[in-house]
Image (cartoon, rainbow, N blue to C red; front, top):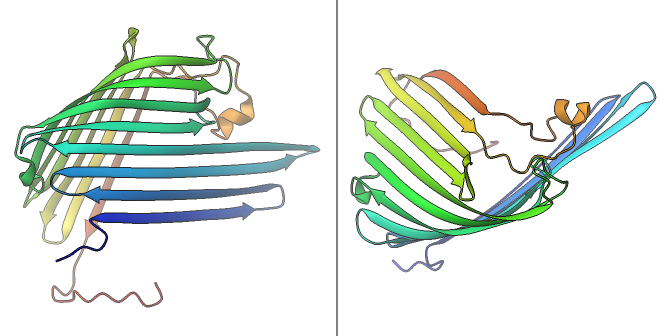
Length: 265
């Protein structure tokens, strides 16, 4: 079958919201665009993401205003070598008021090895990858290390695993990264998701992640205002973060109803 789009898939998403009350008003706009071309030999992915949020509130005779903005441009090229090995190049440019980054550009090569053949991805995989990155940052404000801009080199090691069985599936991933000029400036992340089918129609899911953080080179040197902290407009210094989630679901009824009807969705 001839594909008129040559395997390219494009997607655009636009979202906005407006909230208000007597003393508080806020609005947000988000836009995302993706262009992907994925075949057995090549993976080409390009994306753009823009977010802007603004909030104002009045207290007594004072009016306070805060905003948050972020944009991300990304590109990925991956090439299959054989049924176990792949190589690629990744590039990313972004800006974030939350992270005190006026502009950032990162690019670097990567290589990946899958213990199981790639064509078994629907059932099991254990992928190990390694990447090197060149990074240049420009900051809105002087950082805690007295920098307004800097060029860095970093490395990252990842392990991603997935196993699917009739009883459910489990996903575990771990990632370690550090800056080459100082290995003490590093980050370690571990996450897990477990989905278990208890009996027909009833399932339980558990998940969580933990991060050990020592790489916040971008934090501003000045002490943050109380409003910035309460409204979560700027990232705070921390040595770790974690999250945990739990859920159950139960599905029952006809096993023959596979009709799709989107009227009034």
